[in-house]
Image (cartoon, rainbow, N blue to C red):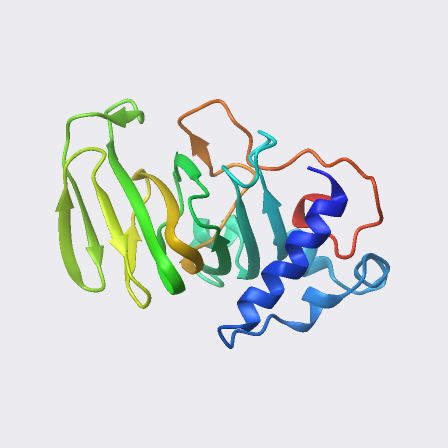
Length: 221
């Protein structure tokens, strides 16, 4: 992705988030120099901040995701079962923009439609080898009610609705009708090691530096 395109996506995404009354924390608006100069070790070490990905495929409008991580614990906390065991993100899925099929080995997450269009989640159970089970039904909690779908079944979340995904559950998602604002509340998030994709793709974008960054991404840290 070009840095100029990323800068535009950041500005558009911030405006979209604000249109729902959601305000990002102050460090979201630091310049790259301010981020480098600040006492921001926790921000950098915990992967807080802006995250724009095309999954290394170069087709952001078709396959991509906008994310901002507002808080995050550490895997060391998870290992001891004490401390900051949680994480939170705000995300934007553009209309018909795919976040491709993947699973997490450690992270349990609630994915919440915070507004806009419908958020469609496609689900598969994990096989005995960790791969996609093409035959087994999948049962997931949706706002306190269990829902069961066939392998590859889809759940459409309207604004205000959510789904809970436990570790191992394969899922892909996209917005239908309009762009969708998405909340994520989860256990500790480790995007460097805890994303397993069905297809051979990457988690982060390769960036062509055609202009100066308006704000650093977590991948720039």
